[in-house]
Image (cartoon, rainbow, N blue to C red; front, side, top):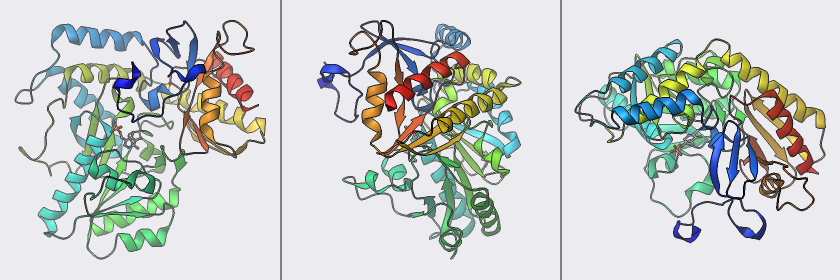
Length: 406
Ligand SMILES: *Cc1c(COP(=O)(O)O)cnc(C)c1O
């Protein structure tokens, strides 16, 4: 029974309060044990970016499972090497030249913070260890990445946190200048488009100022692209749309299409900071994850793929805007990442959209699908459909959302 899980998650429940439990996925669809179908506008929070059961991804994982699942990091794995080379090449336009592979977003951001701390310590000595992040940011759930996360709601109950983290308001150029002043700061960690706090893109001016100040003061500019990277916002890396080259970029979520993975990429300034013995991870560079990651990169880097994301994303935003629905206060989006501010709470609507799946949904026609969407904070809906979603599925999902809004 569900009672065996620690009570860490608000679960979406249907009638009777039972948590919605999936048994199968196919393309943009998930199926529960009663045979009801749900159109997936979540991609598991930007994770299974190619939907469910993408044939090349399935083959890559199955094929690698048959070859070998794991070797320890005393040795190199052919598939980890192939993946790392392809990933670094894909990020070379943003100046990236090396990568460290781990298992999650939080672990990737921990690695980034370690790089910033050591870079500064070796070059400038102790005391210059501060890491500046933005209010509304989300960087993970470990004690250090919680310290980095600029939302008070996450800071209850778990202190003391790792020291040396400072949060400033995004968009505030004076606060940025002040926070990066005084020879105390090793790194600036930012999400170009904040995901967890409601799909909030930083302005071009702010990112440009951040890049200029960091370069001038030898502070590492670090982009957390765990949610907004990998094509989600319509460019392979979100930083490309801002025309900046960070010193460090973290990726995770969608990078292996649903298999756990995380990556810290570094440009010329930061690539040699970590040396043998400085950092590591038992599962880092896991062959199954890397085989999956290769399949994801093959799909996402195919010619025309980013244009498709942009085209699909524009269609969704245009439809949402055209409704002029009284419950919608503001709509924000980049690529296939959309945030919808409501003047009511998001969670009940999220459950109502899922509950449209019949049978069991009062008044639903037979075979009516449910729609899976996300919240981001109390009053914001978040849509992160798989990149592979079809035009017909977009239309269907928007229709369900429109009806659920009432
Ligand atoms: C999800 C997320 C993380 C944390 O990733 P985990 O894999 O859950 O540790 C960090 N940063 C951003 C921007 C995220 O969206």
